[in-house]
Amino acid sequence: MGSMEALTAPENGSAAAGGAGGTACNGAGAATNGGGMERRLRSSAASASWAHLPLEVGTRVMCRWRDQKLHPVKVIERRKGSSSSSPADYEYYVHYTEFNRRLDEWVKLEQLDLDTVETVVDEKVEDKATSLKMTRHQKRKIDETHVEQGHEELDAASLREHEEFTKVKNIAKIELGRYEIDTWYFSPFPPEYNDCPKLFFCEFCLNFMKRKEQLQRHMKKCDLKHPPGDEIYRSGTLSMFEVDGKKNKVYGQNLCYLAKLFLDHKTLYYDVDLFLFYVLCECDDRGCHMVGYFSKEKHSEESYNLACILTLPPYQRKGYGKFLIAFSYELSKKEGKVGTPERPLSDLGLLSYRGYWTRVLLEILKKHKGNISIKELSDMTAIKADDILSTLQSLDLIQYRKGQHVICADPKVLDRHLKAAGRGGLDVDVSKLIWTPYKEQG
Image (cartoon, rainbow, N blue to C red):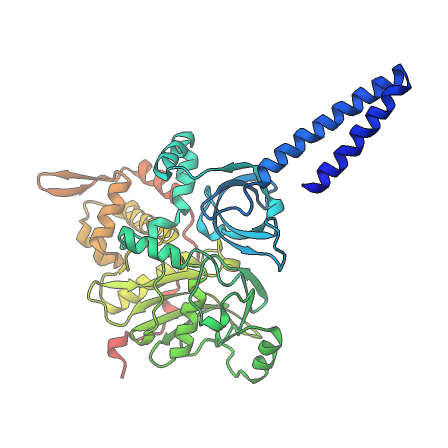
């Protein structure tokens, strides 16, 4: 601020001195005087903007994102950038209010438009005003990725506690195999790894280290070339390994740490003994490289056939998520049970499951001649009757007549819904699945 005032004063002095020299100089002096006033106004505006610094937690302001456009953000946390005591020397952890929490990040002051700083307003009123401004399409896009859909089991106090505890990502990046991956969410790694900008994972045993040199030394000693456990499926370059959490406790815990970086709703299970992990891999001459996984309880009273599911970011949009869901139902068929995913489903998990249920059920309805009951559909697909009912109701394909549900399956309507549900992803070749249900293992 002082430097701007120092620049303004000499300009005024030279203008006054020029005024004694004649008309032309008077004109120049007037122009210079006007320029000085304009600079003072700019300086005053800048002073007003800088008066907000350092920004308080909860402040709302516009921030320049990676698309080089300004987007509204809320300041979640702040930290000093260096040992300087200047109020401008802060970094801010911001939440882009238009987007999912996975895009939250640390930004520097120059990315913020201080002229747009807002005082704290009542959030309920603001949310209502924001929703009125959005088109239905925009709102649907946000709803599809909004994180809170994964927290239905939490009451208001627990939700606030969860958000406070996990509000700032503690690990910014990881290296896994040949990929460097930006993380999405907080994961409760041991305290000595907090604020480590990047973690290095062994892609086979999932041990993690702080430095690349440590990983390189580890890789020379690590004998694994695939996840520990039994290979239960191999088709082409795809393999599935079943890992018992009791037999491979460290691997199971490390997998949970890793998964939590990309799943906001996930509860971290330290007691992995009760779970089986099904790890999907792409295989080549260097080994079997994890692309995703799902877990399930060894014994579930609620008929859950899947507890948690993740496709790692580099492998998303390739059909692997749909493959994992289909695989969980093939295991249920082998067990002779109906299954359903553990609730609550994450935001993207709900979309994926609804798509899977739609494709499987409508393909059967298209081919089936005559009447078919929800019980028969459940027996054929291993999908729980409640999930079948909710899916068909969401598609307006079911009516309640004379005390029972009746499926209305017009072929053109089925085709339209199938097209909207999208492609089914990779097929599970059941003939390549060699597996014995857990309860029957020795």
